[in-house]
Image (cartoon, rainbow, N blue to C red; front, side, top):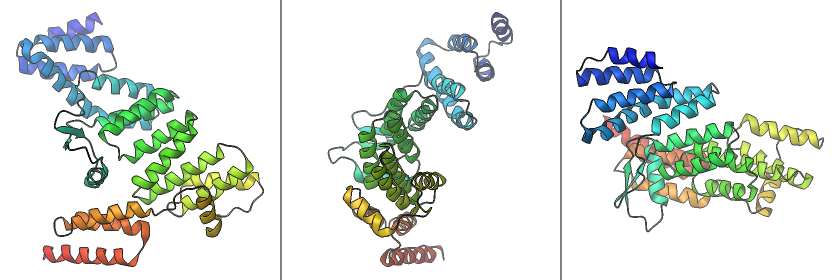
Amino acid sequence: MKEIIDSIKAKLTGDPEADTKFLLKRLDEYRDNDEVCKEIYMLLFALLPEDLQNQHISNVNQQMFEERLSEIQELVSDRQYERALKYLDRSIEHIDKVYEDDKNKYMTFHNAFEAYFYAYNREKDDNKFITASKLDFGTYYKFRGIILNELKRYEEAEADFLESFKWNPMDFEALFNYAKTLFELKKYDEYFKFNVDVLTKKAYTNFAIACCYHNLGLYYLAKNKKADDIIAYNIISFSIAFDETEYAYRDLNTICEKYNMKKELANPKDISECLKKNKIPMAPIEGLIKQLITIGRNFIGKNDKFALDVFRIIYNMTHDYITLQYIKAGEQAIANKQK
């Protein structure tokens, strides 16, 4: 290590701006060497007046954090979990993670709909402004939770997902990976309630609805009893009505093979009776649809494109005639404005 640091020091010019750029490049070059990175940080400190040192290092780390997120995603995709976790923790180490102050909540929604849907549903006594966080801390904690799940460190993963929800409680990837964590921790009752809550309050896409029902089916499969397996068979069959996922078909085939059943979906009558008997809401959820309709109507004439996107979401869930008329009207209004 000494030879590396001596070589770096020998190339410093005495020009603070040039030396800062040079050291940042070396910091990236030796990112896997903790000891060298610490020495480079010390050299960066020495370039600045004392009152600017902490601010500069914070800015350096913010820049690194932003650059690392895509790299961390690639590492997770390549199953290099330990390395990705190391990058995450190093990138965040010196950044102040401010969630809220007296007037603001700093959040990181990934699209306008997530933000409006959260604002519509947040607690009535929450009067703070929703302000975009400078960095996407929700994604940071989500990735950390996903990595810890893969490393089977489920208690730690649970805490990270809960932290990620502070910045974005609408991130479906985080929500369903958290559900997986609860399942692995065998917190089955909590797992069941969580999936019902997501289904009734947040699941505005067919894929999310399908995931909720599939997870509820897994809850019954975990009981490992024939009667519960049949309940799971009905619920997972219903999930396929919203999205035909490979894992849903896999689990249905497993149940059918176990009991020598014909490999086909449960019939609608049995599904309806099963959901009603086990007090599981049947999608599309009326309360959720009403919220979506209210949001869509509020933006008619103000932001027709956003309103149109909301009504398309509703139509994908309901396929009803009235919503289709809203969509046609919205498309015509946008077309007229473009003429």
